[in-house]
Image 1 (tube, one colour):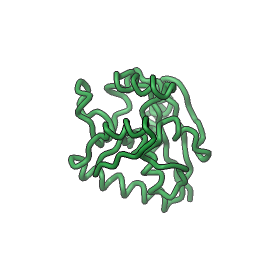
Image 2 (cartoon, helix red, strand yellow):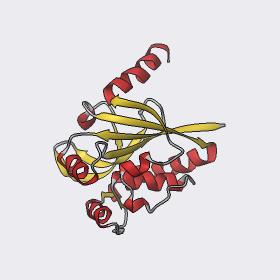
Image 3 (cartoon, helix red, strand yellow):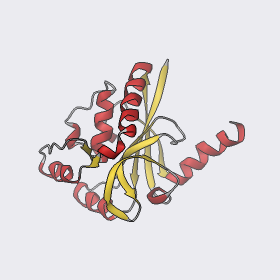
Image 4 (cartoon, one colour):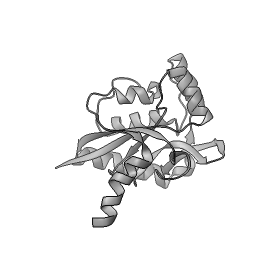
Length: 182
């Protein structure tokens, strides 16, 4: 039986997102992974506090609030086996239970610019985390997760684009019917 995961790339408009965009020349500069179409079960590395860009770490993201309220996005789906799904979920659950031990890998962003991995224990930036999780699930990622940008992830051949536009519009389309008939 096949399962589906979702890769969510967003343009949040933060200073860090704009700086990354200036370097990459790409609009979507934040990557998340979700285990449901409605994006209730969505994870990444990012801000823990809305008004403090230095308070980064591992988090379960709320696709309706904070920086996502007005965000543009591109959403991809990926079919995986039951085993792959469970392996990724197991790893995410472990990280979530130990989330206070994880940090945002700000220094690793400079490694991407220099094309040289910066290793830090229990530290990731968003696309590094998503790439690493895909690898944990046994999916081929074609390069070192520490050097992958959201754009690199979007180029993976097994991802199928399902939506591009306002994240709020996507959520209204997938969540409202579930609420009515769920």
